[in-house]
Length: 313
Image: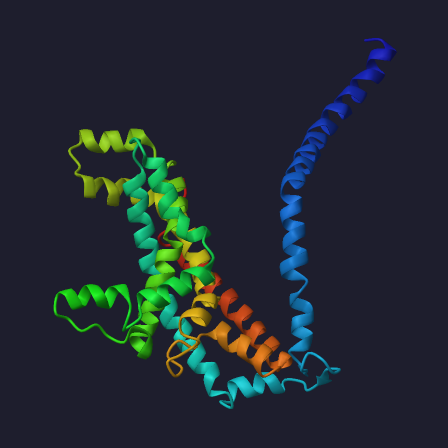
């Protein structure tokens, strides 16, 4: 071996060792080019605003004058029982979440299975089901308030045809909460359907065909083949809908205004009332921080429990 070859061989080996690192850096750079805008937007609009909110939560501020530092007084007011509506709003939000999230997901799955067919006009049906989701919640709330009216509502008018006197839907706490939950399910069923429909595209056709050949019925194929592949999608919906249910506001404001009494007085409505009606920005900021902590804890618990029932391919 010549002297030139002796020198060249280590150089080539060093270049070969550096090449995988360069390819890895290029892949990382391309990845960050795709996710960078989302990460930057989340940082600017979601993460950074938490910091001034946290600082404001330790003050007494009306939004106009200079804030006065009060330490943990706002948090003490919440947890020492000085604000009775704090606990009531949390309870109402929990009731709304329990009534809305599971039923909404089940209906989304049913609709996705219904429209997961290649039939003429199916695209139009999907668009009609999705239409309420892109409609303004204020408009949905106004229409629902008319639908559930005890005097002029469509529901009570239909019940009257069968000799049944309909309830005062928005005038009683229990029925008012039920009306809000039904409206929210209807308004968001299109979103749930689209997410589940995307999950259905990932179910291997070969497994379904094998189940058919083995004599499995429709329900057996769904519960033993399709449903396990849908568990990651259901988990995603569970996270998104739980967070969304804790933030329900527009329907409450338009349909019930938190009433009757405090029957539909949910957490975000309480936060809004403290901030923009009573002008207690410091206390409202403390409520926002507590909500952030609650959602973080609920999401963490859901993530831990998901390891028992979510199956990834």
